[in-house]
Amino acid sequence: MFDFSINEMLDMQKRLQDKYKDKWEKISPETGKNKLLWMIGEIGEVIDIVKKHGGITASNDVELRKDLIEEMADVLMYYNDVMLCYGISADELKQAYTEKFEKNMTRW
Figure 1 (cartoon, rainbow, N blue to C red):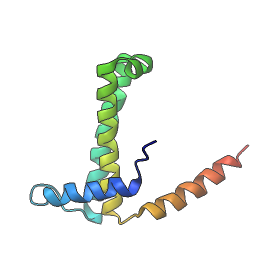
Figure 2: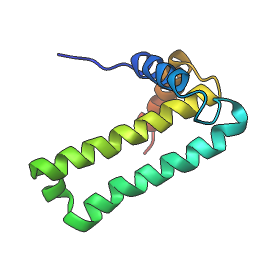
Figure 3: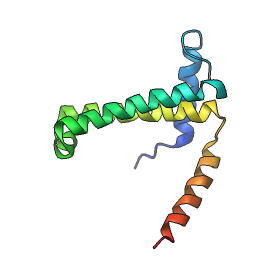
């Protein structure tokens, strides 16, 4: 089974950012807000697909599913840009995610 890690995504985003460094905003804490806004826009595109076609159709129709997954990949790309902007490592994310998971497991 193929495992796609946060570190792999971050490395890919670094390469993409480097390729377009003269055209895109520089990765920095100052541009983190803009990356978050772009990410929200991409989340809106995911929502539009599901809202317009319904979750079952979006999951099962081959072309819609392809579009849904592509938009979700866009969300992850901006998510990783945000992590780069704020210097958040995969290890830090894992620690925070694990702590939040454990906290949620003890609710109710």
